[in-house]
Length: 607
Ligand SMILES: Cc1ncc(C[n+]2csc(CCOP(=O)(O)OP(=O)(O)O)c2C)c(N)n1
Image (cartoon, rainbow, N blue to C red; front, top):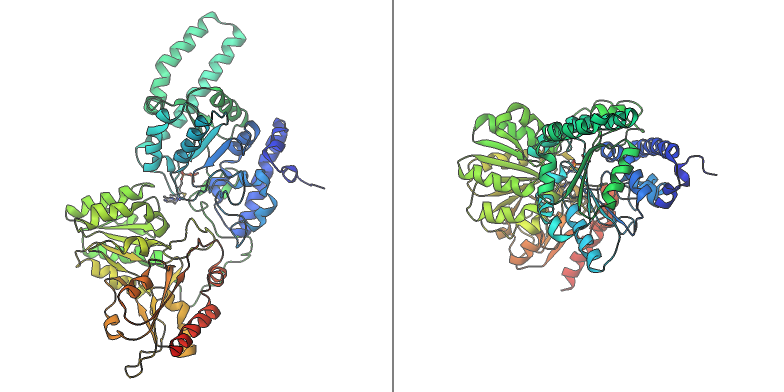
């Protein structure tokens, strides 16, 4: 027997049968369940709390999976997952073999597109719309894009293309005024006037209602005058921009007012022009701590299990991001050419202290990774030393800017790649595994992977005197202060040598010591480390927290004369899970490494 209404919902058709009060009850149950699940699994809570009514309205009015609902980033899709057959499975949210924290077509036919990286939903929706139009189909195509994701270059390219691609598409702009932290830029300023817009809409509704009630003859013309004079003042250029782009603008609508949402979506669905439906929502809606501090509650670790505060550790550890942020502050203190750039990730990349200490030399460009690098090129050409901090996975967007705008003119820009390597529960869209393969082909680039906090500081220091473009990659998690002890390379025997790149020195140190295999912690990808010359005829074992194909080991094998065993992430997308689950899955845990290395060494002696 189902004890909640939510437990009786298996598909959107079940939502369609509910009346207004049942829908309100369901909204409350969804929020309750979401908070409960995330308290145990961790995840993106605040954004998903803000889209509960929108999700209910979409399920109530439309018929997915025939109608395509495409979520940008997808971190706001928890209610969607609950209403499309995955409520029970949410118990395993973000866990190994469990429900993904973003939409994933391989998980459910209701997830029309993969998501995780911002800015692509409108383009994908346009593709679905073009396909529908070609097939003379009738289904609805709806993209839901956050106010921050809307400012991404790909979103803007898609906006430019809407009108000449299709006549029927709904773009829902989910405007909560927030990226992960405060949204930035001209769009954010324009949207900030939504409050005024909401007020206008309330005055209009009141005027209409009063007119009906009193049957005042003059009120119609009063209302028209109100519309002529006040509406442009309050909404100013916001609706004009969308209408110039060929989309009918509806809004702003209170995104937590279900009847208003249903009416606006129905009106958007009935039209024969593309619609931009602008809704105002509250990030964290319904959970006071998240409403008060939506940035902190954007992505959270599980908190239910932590009954008491953890005891203070003897040696407080420092994350790679914090190590980077404080090192850059030191550099900026000494050298006023140093400037920092983030693409909407000032907290995640450890740059928050830099923004505080050097506000005029810190730039948040929004979710615009390509712009971040091309912008850095301009600053560098003008004599500054820009440090651009991006997550490895999001930097994939900007490879061309690195090649065309930075490496070709050889500008002293340092690209600092955080979360380089596996990231855990965020899964395949967020693992930073491809940067070595993508960037190492670029001529004139210096490319490093520090193995300790001390290494990161030294390499950052070095970039101040080096004039080459540089990439520095480091993983998610805690940074070692210094290197672990490793068996040295004996000069007299030609035994195989392990080259452990960056953070993998921690993975291999116990095994290298156990097998007494010589091991070198390598911090340099390009140019290749000088130690390779001395190891010329020795078999090598390379290890990297990156895709093996095209990575560091592949670079070594390209030039090395003796056999090379390349150990890294194999040629398949890595799922979500804890670091240890994933290392077992990828045959990179202690036992698998022992097996693979032993087999390699045995193979050598057979030759
Ligand atoms: C290309 C890219 N860069 C950065 C991120 C990291 N990121 C995840 S969510 C987010 C903010 C999204 O804000 P918005 O689009 O307004 O959606 P909301 O969370 O407010 O619903 C950012 C910057 C990303 N997912 N993709």
